[in-house]
Structure formats: structure tokens, C-alpha cells
Image (cartoon, rainbow, N blue to C red; front, side, top):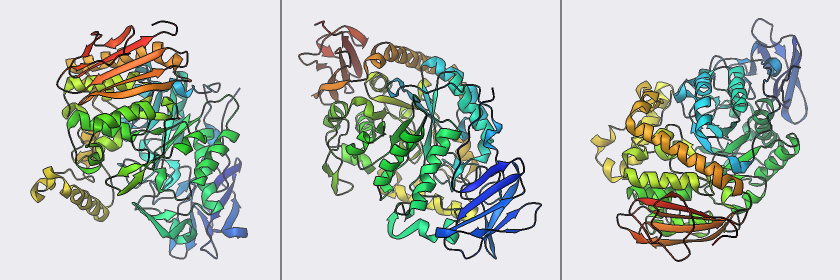
Length: 587
């Protein structure tokens, strides 16, 4: 039996027969709109209520089309399912049922089993390149890959956060069916696939919405990326809600990571989105929604969202590992050890305390949330790529201390996330890269260099000129994965450590994770913490981490059979970890 999937959206091009397609566009700023299909005469679109235009045309899959919104402007479909000639080319009608799913019975995995591997598709060789790496990742114990944003962006090199057509998978990475094949193959290996989606802004080049749907944006609110999107309007809410459902239902993604939701003014839309996803996904299917949210709003995590990226945890660990205290690390430089203890015991480090770089309180109390409500990481695309030179921790931190922190990442009850290449200790940079038109490329390059003027290392203008140009193709090339690194002895050691830690996680932590709760978490030295959790089966997991240069005494109550790390029951050596697990009913 052929198993196919399609999600019908209010807007865009929908096949209603082999050679018949319905087109719908919300263009409230227009009096007339024309449909221009290559090879056919122009077709006037009918105007409907609330700014909608529609037409049915005698064309099928593969037809290329634009909307004529002004005599001098024809635009791609904002709900385009494919842009074979980039953002300025015509959209293409897609038959979503052309792909036959091999693993139609896949229903996902429980959240507690999640180990995330974040990957940039372009830097890993496109959809086919990622697919080729899946078997090795699955064998290592990674249960989910998270793809950085795929929305069509201008050019062929970009992080994806400059996307302007949220329904069209980036054409430089491959075709829609190749993306589905990647996801299908992952499911056959028992792996989930998550997608990073951007609903808080559009990129600076190739977004034509304001020219025919000016109400899509509001002129009284701005974000770091420009005017805010107006989520007060039902058409706007539907556009993004259906986008989420489209990825989950038609492409069978297992979850979404919502980028920077703090920039969305109407937070109630997030709650509505989660409710709609729960209502429309099939019974028994595991679908997970994850937030990036600088507001540290704990309440949202009880409203249909599985977890939030724990930037507080990363920042405290980064300061302890590197000693850096500039930029946003200044917020964690006063007492990073106490911050880390609070992260391990309560989730957020900032739960209403004054946040120095904002000049106002940040966060809400999170101690009532389970540890699995937080995605912990040592590195990700932001934390590496937003550095001027894109350095990884392998070039910034002491190797022993980094290995101890890595063990904390993979054995703590929070959900771990790794960045591509971290599993073997890659030393290649991951830089910020784009492929804008030359004028915009220069603006981005110069603006980025100015941003680093406040950092001591780049206070010299000549040194700022050494910051790689994002628009230079060499910047992207330097960021691509290099699997030849794996042959080095230290990288083989890194792979072995990853396999060991993930095997321990799945044997001892994952089966006990549902229902886990914090018991206590305290500083035990200048750069050392000890934390304990009562697991779902009443076993006690205890982790002591010492990132400092001197041994520290272990606190009373830190006991139990050794799971990993230092065996000394009384003291923790410098740059080391001790992980212990006491079964329920045993002292």
C-alpha cells in the first residue's frame, strides 16, 4: 500500500487534480492580483473577503508561477513549497504525495529518550550528505538530529535565520523529496528529526510581503531584526500555525525548535500553536515542541512545550571553562558556580533576578519543572558561530575540564544537545556565513566587525579587519564538517568517550528520567558543584563536577556505586567528575 502525506494549507498552491491547481494569496494591500504561470496566459485572481485572492488554473506539479501584485512587481508565493531558482525566481507547484514513505508506522520516541545532534545541512553536504551520516550517529546513541532552519534564503550559503519563504525547503540543499527521504531514513534507524523554525522575523533580502500585505507587520513594535510581525491578526497566526503543522504532518518531522520566541509580542499565540499541534497530530504519535526564549518563562513549559534551550546552563559552564567575562558572559561572571548549581537543581539560573546587560529582572521561578524540561548544551550554532572567529571549546578550554563537563552534559537528567563534530572533539571553526548580494554583504560584514569593537581582543581596528567576511565563500568552506579529523588519535578518544557516556545514559538514566526531580544542588568549591536527583524509580543520581585547579571535598550524602569518573569517595580531583547511582532501597 502506498503511504503518502499531504497537509492542505489555506494559502499557496494546492493540487486538486493531475492538471488542476488552486492558488490562494492573502494580499490585503492590493486591489487586483494576477497569476502568472510559465507557458500560460496571465490569469486574473478573484478577490474574496478579508484580502484573499484565489484562482484555479490548468496546471500540475512542476508548473512555475508568480503573483503579479503591481504592474511593476511579480512575487513568489509566500507559501511556496519549492523555489528551484532561489528566492527571486518563480515558485513551483509541488505534489506532496509524490513521495512514498517507507516507514509509515513510525510514531516517534518519548521525550525522555532524546539526545539531540544539531546540524547545519549545507555544511554537512546537503540533504543527501546528512542522510549518509545518520547510521553512524544512530550507532553512537544519538536519537535525534536537529536541522538548522531550512526556509528558502537568498543565495546558497546561510545559517537559515535569514529565510524569507518558510514553506520552501532551501533549494541549495536538495529537493523536497530528498528532504523527506532523509527523514524517512532517520525513522528507519530509530532516530527522530527536529527542525529549527523562525517565526519571529524574516530575512533582510527577498521578503516581498510588505508590498502586498502591509498589515502582516506592525509599525509600533521593533525587534533586533526589524519591525515586528503582527500576531494579532488571524491571517498571520494561521500562516505560521499552518507552517508548523505542514512540517510536522507533511514532512513528518518529530518536533520543532522555535527560535527566539521572546521576540513574538503575542505570547498567547504560542499556547494556541501548541494546542493545535496536540489536536491535529495522530493519536499515539510523539511530537515535541522546544523553545528558545530569553525571557525564561517557566509557565510556557507547562502549556504544551516539552522543553526550553538552557542558555543559562551553557553560559555558566562556558565562564567556568574559559574564564571569559565579556558580552553576555558578564551576566554569569560574578558567581558562575552558584549559577551552575541553580541550573542543575532548578533549571534556570535567572528566575527573576536582575540581569546586568538588560538592566531589568529576567526569568520566572522554574524549580517546579522536571529536569527534562531543559535542553542543556556546551556548544551550539549560536555559541560557536556568534564568536568573531567561530572557535569551539576544544580550542578554548582545558581538555580535562572539557571532558568532565561533557560527561555532565550526557549524564545529567537534562536533555543533552551536541553540535555537529562535537562527538569527536572537532577543532574546526563554525563561522557566521551568508551569500547576500554584494552591497548587503558589505553591510553585514562591516556591522559584524563593529559589534566586536567593545571586546578587548578586537579593540584595535586592524585586528577587527581579520574577522572573516561572512559573505566570502571561504568562510563557509572553513565551517564545513571535515570527517578526516576523525582519524586523529584524540578524535578517536572523543568518539569512544561519547559512545561510553551515551551507553551509560541509556542504561541508567533514560529509564528513570520520567518523574525525576531535584533533591539538592550546591557549590562545593570555587568551580565545583554537587547535585542529586531522585529519579522516577526513587533511585538517587548524584553528580559532582570540579572544573577548578584544586581538589575539593565531597559533601556528606554524596555516595553510592560509581557510574563514571573519579572513584575517590571523599574528594574530587581537579578537572574531574564523579557520577554515582544508588538504587531505590539501597543506602
